[in-house]
Amino acid sequence: MSEAKHNTLRFGIVTDIHYNPETGNQTQAGLERCIEKWTSEGVEFVIQLGDLISREGPEAEADLIAVRDMLARFGGPVHHVAGNHCLAVPPERYKAIMGLDSLYYTFASQGIRFIALDGMEVSAINAPQAEADSHLLEYYRDVKQANFYCGAIGARQLEWLVQELDLALNNEEPVIILCHLPLLEETTDEKHGLLWNHEEVVAILSRYPNVHACLSGHYHSAAQAMRNGTRFDVLPAFRDCLDVPEGCCFMVELSDRGIMIGPTM
Image 1 (tube, rainbow, N blue to C red):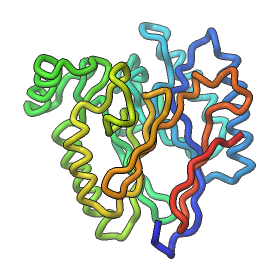
Image 2 (tube, rainbow, N blue to C red):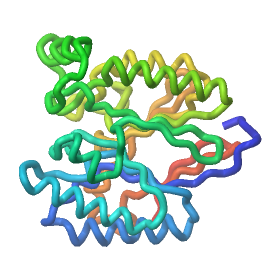
Image 3 (cartoon, rainbow, N blue to C red):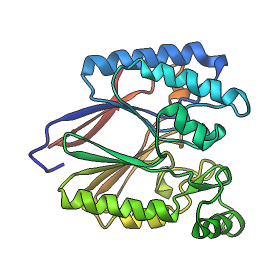
Image 4 (cartoon, helix red, strand yellow):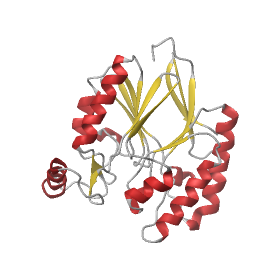
């Protein structure tokens, strides 16, 4: 980032925890190590990029509350991005449990604007809220036959995104985009899939020179790519590192030197 007026900002980040009681002790121990390191590094907040849970059905809500409480031990702000597995809990109930007014929102820290997207707004598990979204769901489900466990950003959210990007540009705020689903084909594989209308969203982001990065999860193996000066980082899944001593929690540092993402242990 070239804006000299911004100080160094550090925050913790984790994705695809996929908590379930069978591995609960390992999950808790791993997150405790993450929190200890995040705290010692003085991070301002933590971002959780989705797929907190694995199970569906009546157990899903209890699992969500359990892993939410594990992350809450950080003591500072924890910003949550909903993943496809998270919505095994109905969206309205999910928002209530996680303390969210909306599944897409924005916040700022040290002059940097973070925009969290709801990539599952139009999906097989969400009833469309507008006629345009109904057509969008039909198109991807019946015509494109896209991965049923992925989704798209709806018309109203796209309008909101443009408004937020315009405001950030006018305010000279660098922007970091947060989305559980990857936005570029080269940062995922056919099995995991990506945001259904990723091309439209990336085209919007490319119009804004202050969009510096998009951070995602979902593709467990991780990937990175550049597009029009914006870096797209997909982080490794926490679940796949339960047996690895160094774990899969990361710290992001934003400064005049750019964006640095590295493991915390």
